[in-house]
Image 1 (spheres, helix red, strand yellow):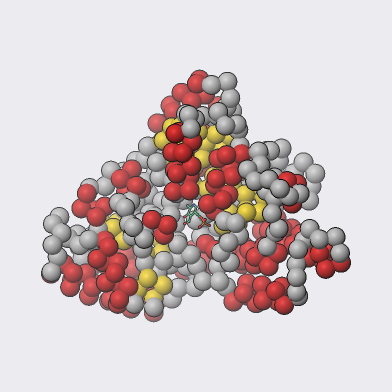
Image 2 (cartoon, rainbow, N blue to C red):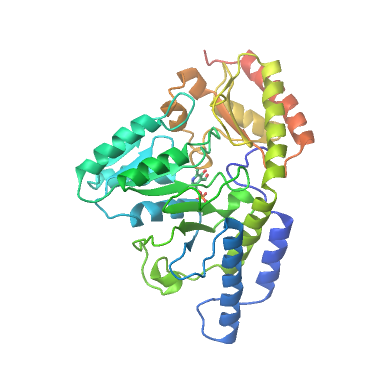
Length: 390
Ligand code: PLP
């Protein structure tokens, strides 16, 4: 199987798997237990959190400094940020390009009476900063509580990098809290949590060759988060529950490798992605690449194949030995039309036929070259028998 679905999840780096296996071999590890075994586990976990701090350029041991709330992954971190920053009546402003974990939270909040704004995107898949600014000013005038904003650093479907610095300046000027969903950025592009000037940032380990089921919410100095779970003293009661020590250790090592290898990885992924796009274009000149005129993650391409249905293409590629996706992983089971491409005002045919390929630093040129041949073969076969019109 040629794995080109790395925006959905990545293979665990062997060094990460080895460190986790070693941790599991040490026996029980409840970092809240008072006995020596528990205290040792707590020490190993604290070391891992400090290691994450080094990778992010922060010191989590400083009183009044930034904090790291450990979570089960990106979905939880996003929900925690949206629910816990501001108050239940703070107006919420998200972009129409966000991941389902943000949009579904926003829609539910709206049903419960919270005022929600959805910032539009340009046709290139970038949040429209002027429209965003107008909406934020409207939101600020609405209530006596300040708005909460959530914007992703890079889109998971198109790879388009979002104008976080501009968004952050607008939020600061309006006094709004800013949460950044940086799920897709770590290890792919330079991403400095401190210079972004956000209140909270989502991290999830399985997108950068760490284990699934663990992530974090970085909190800027002085930012407090209203707890959403109750019943334990862990993490100063902000997010109670027994910490998964081995997963946290795995995330720490994966993040360190991601940050240390980022520039080489970025070059390598760009080379693979650009080769894939160039060769597909040569073979299928009426192909459409979404967001290609914007700055994108080096790993990602979202391609519409004229005249075929994305679900048929996905299944045929699967049978041919290529793993890729139509839309984001969480929606690909039922595959509703991509809300991201809709927000970009893509034409219907393009939405119907869009497939996402995503490489990682572990992908190879041999895999990509083989994939190009298979994709073209599958496409030509489907197109010749296609019932979907342009
Ligand atoms: N945010 C973005 C942009 C994502 O791409 C994803 C996963 O695809 C998530 C959030 C959810 O992360 P997790 O799978 O760790 O819950």
